[in-house]
Image (cartoon, rainbow, N blue to C red; front, side, top):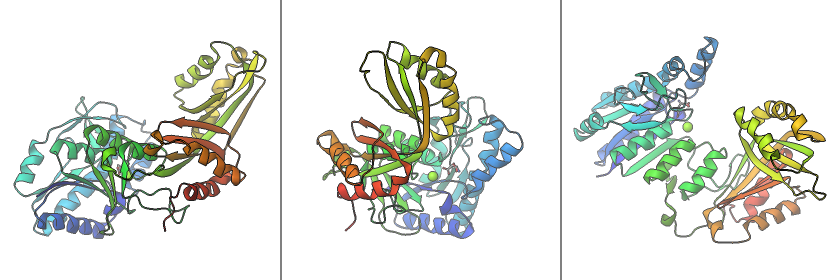
Length: 406
Ligand code: ASP
Ligand code: MG
């Protein structure tokens, strides 16, 4: 007998027919003798609609009332699944975040889970029943409903699985697992059998939307294995696991890309102490995240060029912020470009093997693609290139690292 936490995303509970299919999936595990606890998202599209309502009502983002509105989507699906299970003769009850309670901090709109009181859930499970938990929501220290940030049901599921000491945490979604790269762009992308927490974290934060980044961070901390799988079929998905569970480690496990990048270059900025602080301090104060940074030494000891990247949505504000400091920075020109994409090759295997970056540079060179910025970490090499080459670069790199499906 295993204890299983099952999480179903928005497309898996999009209508009553899909919710009935979820109930059947739950029942299958019960019939095999397992214990099951379910965590649900809102129906696909509902949370977006609720965000729209809150905005139309003039609702300030990230306030208690905003969360009161947003949390309703999950209440509907949790109730409907519990009803469907009861209809099939399965004992079940719905749980809202505040009823359990799932205690969070008070940061509305992106609260963090602090503690889950599991006694009520344990009781239902031990009596053979199925708790159905509304994901994405909790109870703040002010006694108000909080939400965990978009995609937060993944985090609820991992937190509940860890608190209940679950043997498995199955993340049911509308794709079959985690792929080597975006299958919509690279037709022969391969589904990964296993991926490490660290690699998944990089993939998630670089835009592979299968799991919320915070959920992966939490799973890594609590060593909770995850199984990302399809709610439409029974085929095995991708296991997110510890590094030593992977015997044959590929050099590169996946290639991610992000079009959400924009580049700013300060031409001939003074080469003297305090300049970097004078540029990036005001950006930090304006809550603008800077991603890649390159600066060269100056040939004459006087001035050099400095390039950095920010999210596309922040570009205009970033330009204004830097221009406001022109007096101090004394640069000759400021150039900005939003037609760029960041491509990253990711793999824990590169910790122990040289040559990964070189293969990337050679492959891009063969295709005549110019690299504008490079950055590396222990398990990742990223380059910034012109956006029009996204598809070409992804396909060429996918082949070069031997990732193509047979
Ligand atoms: N319904 C919420 C959202 O769309 C939470 C989730 O689905 O994970 O962000
Ligand atoms: Mg999701």
